[in-house]
Image 1 (tube, one colour):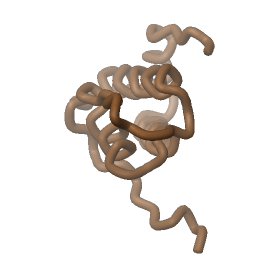
Image 2 (spheres, one colour; image 1 turned 60 degrees about the vertical axis):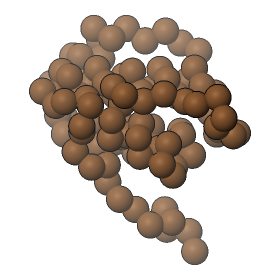
Image 3 (cartoon, helix red, strand yellow; image 1 turned 135 degrees about the vertical axis):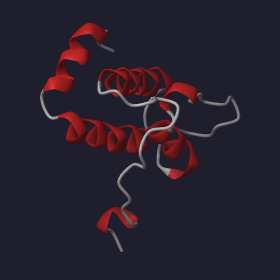
Image 4 (cartoon, one colour; image 1 turned 30 degrees about the vertical axis):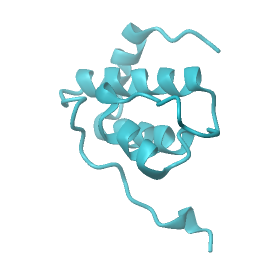
Length: 97
């Protein structure tokens, strides 16, 4: 896993404001495997944790927690409250039927 420089992440906010935040919300949602855990990570990243009772995840806990930390940093730099972000984009079945 690559170590992420959070100061460099803050500079990304200048390029693309809201679009980057929503795209990262979707990425975190998918990394968690969707569901309630994914919504919690995408919409309340500052309060997010992975319970030990959680089953198999598509990505490792360290990778997910790092992505959530980046989302929290992006939200703070964009002036949003990382405890209550705007709703993540909704999509039904990701186009798979």
